[in-house]
Every structure is written in structure tokens, then in C-alpha cells.
Length: 163
Ligand code: ZN
Image (cartoon, rainbow, N blue to C red; front, side):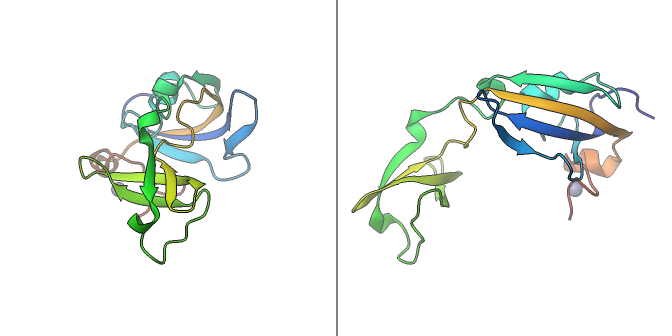
């Protein structure tokens, strides 16, 4: 039995995420609850921190600053590429996502943000980077994680990770 949210607890939540303008950005309302393994960085740090110690049935209003959410907006991640740097058959449309090799050969996921005659501007920031986030969360279920889940670093089963 687990009474409160702490490390290695599998937590099921319903949540609604709003931006500063109160517009809904993401919601699991009406869907299966989101299930995650607490203390393993599966959800953004600012939300994880504010859920610690909560119980089943608790409602949590969590305000998360960009630094503890999807990061500050980084101008350096806006890149101007030449059209010929993309594969010939690439679908170059606004909002389309591509994977690029970053400076350290890491994978950088970018979105097309501007299309010009021979240059394409892409943005490697998370769409929610630089945004203050407002979560309404209700805690639906708690259970201790299995050894396997702790080793994998995620929750298994409906609403969690499938292999
Ligand atoms: Zn797994």
C-alpha cells in the first residue's frame, strides 16, 4: 500500500494543462488517466515536485515556471537551413517536424517555422518552451512500482508504457 506520492510510486492522474491565457493546451479529461513512475523524470520537474506527498482524491493546482517545465526559449535553436540540406522528397510545410543531428551529434527535433525561396527556418525549441504552465491535476490511483518498472524507469500497463 502507498498512501502518498513518493519515489517509486506509480501514479495515475487526470490533468488539464492551460497556458498563461487560460487556453487549454493539453487535457486527459475524459480519457484514461495518465500513469507515470514518480521520481524518475517521466513528467516535467515542476509538476513532479508539486505532486510529491499528495494522496488519492487530492486536487492539485500546479503553476510551473519554464525552467521547471519545458525549458526557457533558446534563440540559438532557431536555425536557418538551405533547402538543399533537406532530402529531395522532404515535405516542407509549416509546422512539420524533422530530426536533425545537433552539434554534438545528438538528435534535435525541429519544427519548420518559416519557408523562403531557398532557405528554411526551423525551431528546435519544445513548443511549450518559455511558457508558464498551469496544471489542474487530480490524483486517481497510487500503487508501489514493480522492480521491473523501477529498472526501466517508467510505469507499465494501461495509461503507462507498452512494450
Ligand atoms: Zn518498461
